[in-house]
Image (cartoon, rainbow, N blue to C red; front, side, top):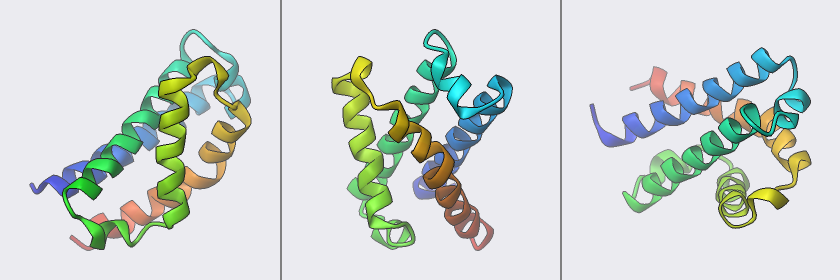
Length: 117
């Protein structure tokens, strides 16, 4: 299987993990309030998602990346930067917005790409 497909599958898996964490916690707000487990897991999965998009960029997979909203891709990198450099200061309202609004859009694009491979 080619690297770009593996990277997309990894992103999809991480989004699913986040969705499951939220479901198990009862809501996004409750998941993010759980500093010890759920929040830490969500933030690590978001970091991993950003890293996979960065690897796609470094691999020159611009055709794949063009399927995603440019601002969403920039947003994943920005969120990763905030998590890496100011973990305790991460704006949870932004994280909630990403989980609620952006991840489902990304998952849909990934599903569309993977269905046509």
